[in-house]
Amino acid sequence: MAKSDVKLLGAWPSPFVMRPRIALNIKSVEYEFLEETLGSKSQLLLESNPVHKKIPVLIHGGKPICESLVIVEYIDEVWSPGPAILPSDPYDRALARFWAAYLDEKWFPTMRNIAAAKDEEARKALIDQVGEGLVLLEDAFSKCSKGKGFFGGDQIGYLDIAFGSFLGWLRAIEKMNGVKLMDETRTPGLLKWANSFSSHPAVKDVFPETEKLVEFAKVLAKLKATPPK
Ligand SMILES: N[C@@H](CCC(=O)N[C@@H](CS)C(=O)NCC(=O)O)C(=O)O
Image (tube, rainbow, N blue to C red; front, side, top):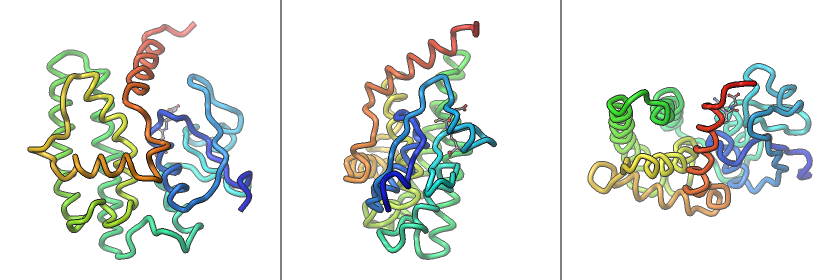
């Protein structure tokens, strides 16, 4: 497959964009990364994802595929055989999809809201909710990993990608709020997993630095505070 046949529309700070990047790395697929500019949407993005107008979009042989987890599943099916991303067992697959949906629908939106909390009490309540979510995920980790290093077992799988893509922002939010959300007492398994995940060969080159994300968050906050002209 020529590199030009696989294009990914994205942006470096986006956790959702990290997902297909990791999946493509796992499958050793070369691709062209087309970086969107903050605050504007390219014509290609608007044409490729007219429903949500969001990144990531994978364009494979001219055909667009949208939604990060749909893209990860597509990559797993198309570049097969190769290291499997989704679990082969139907129950394990269902569990991985269940927790990925929890992360996207509940856990991450709560964490994202911390920055916009209206006062200190609201901020603290959101931080507590994120911590409670991590305790649930610690339990999910011990069930899914079956004593191995990743949710997917010996190798990074679907749920590792779904959750691991949020780790950069989790670390940035810890730093910006002066808190530790993952720790040895409440989430020992996740703490170890987070280090293995972020240093994995398929991940480390696309894993954003905490400091860069903190700076980016400040730029975003400024943009939000500026009234439209
Ligand atoms: N559910 C989508 C979420 C994608 C998403 O929220 N992308 C953000 C970047 S992190 C985006 O494109 N935002 C632009 C906008 O909302 O207009 C997915 O999993 O792909």
